[in-house]
Image (cartoon, rainbow, N blue to C red; front, top):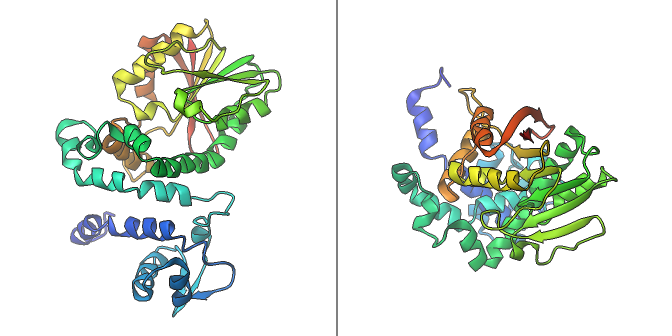
Length: 328
């Protein structure tokens, strides 16, 4: 970036919201689903998804310049990137793109000055009770959010399971584990272990128990956490500020026997000064939930007063890390 014209860089940054909005809208309309292996004209795609022909052509022209679809005259073809927007792709990112494009997120960024001035989530200005309360009031958006979390887990869960040996544990607890995608995958590879899925009652309402997986409804800020010899926390802590995160760690430590392992699965904030995904998602956490991404040292400073000793960081193939700590 150092050799680019500063005015050009600022111009592109100032208009940077245009590209993602085009991406969100194309994903919402299902344009990638309407395009298979054979090229189709913009007119055919527009008819299939209910779009204006000229508007769709102009949007696809912008996206194609970034490698999302290929546009040759009036014909549209898939690229490896655009195929990831198909619903039937085994690693589909359409749910994640739709989730990032939810109106409640964009409304929050319209009030981002509140977050910058106060350090409090901007979403408080547009959705009473914050994101989780909003999704509870709008179940259609909740479905999109849940689908995004499930799609994300399709890449991250195999990477986590492949990076760590879970076979030494007897009882594994997944704290805030949602519908149990990670815990089920862990148990598949650790035949001697049983699992306990801990989350809010409304989250676990439709989850099926099994002989090796039991449900433990509760709120980790209010209710006792089950006793286990290993605990999973996958992308839970980044939803919370330091005080709440410390409270979660302490709740787990109260239940954990000595030498129990705590495995925190998170994107670690990099110290590298250049662009990085974690710096972007850190601002998203500030805007919509009041959480943050953290460095390894920041996790250490939260874990030690809660009674855990940080042991190591374990990178995974997906880029997310496992932070291993032991109950002191």
